[in-house]
Amino acid sequence: MPAGEPIGVQSEEFSVALERARSPSGPLHIPDREWELTTTEGSAIARVWIGNRWFELPLRCENWSRGRRDAYRRIASGEAVSGDLLVYSRSGTEALNGNRRSPPGILCKAMAWLPREQQKDRARQRSVLRAGVRRPDPSIRNQDIREIDINNLRKAIRANWVSFPSQVPTFPSCRRPDLEAKVVQLYFVMGWNCVDIAARYGTGYQQVRCILNGWKCRATNAGYIQHIPPAEACINFR
Image 1 (tube, rainbow, N blue to C red):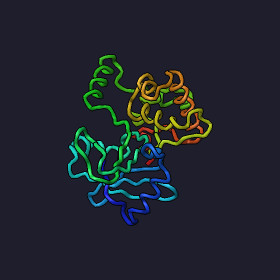
Image 2 (cartoon, one colour):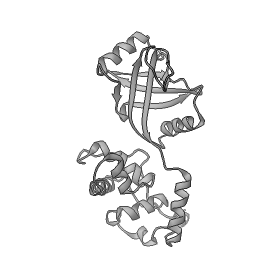
Image 3 (spheres, rainbow, N blue to C red):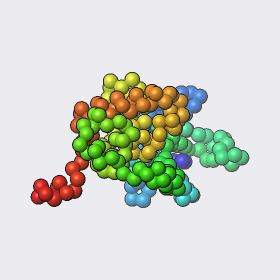
């Protein structure tokens, strides 16, 4: 994503901060918690934390395809699981996009995992219906959440029987805090299975399950996950 001059600051100030932060031979890797994509007055903006302050980079989105616009929207809205952002300071002699040469400026590359395509979700739903599993077992409503396995807990969350935090909390006691929030969001919100998640992050199947089970216990004890009363109970309460 080509970017223009930073908003509200001199370009020299941004260039100095970028050169100090990045390695001499490559781009600057900004972790997911230190960048975000936003939309302001119809313009695409990348907010990045470099040095000790935020910079706002206007992205040149005039020639974006519909697919790229949709991907940007998903990342900005939080539908996608974001990874690192790579920020390049490129010269006019750099060749990009094959044989095409780009003018001097800033280039941002966002790394993110988008939700699975709708047609795959529909195929998965059809296979679940063929297996005779339409909704979670009603007995889940009466179980202690700590006793519900992660597979049935995911069904309950997606059926709106159990609450799920809008921002996935992380806990310092986790062995892999760098993966915890991403694994949890991919599994419980986006419907990925443990095998696919393990392949994505180059880790073991059992380690993924360990992260999910550990997070479930800590999130339950902290009150992030609770049973949602059925609508009938709320009507009777009124």
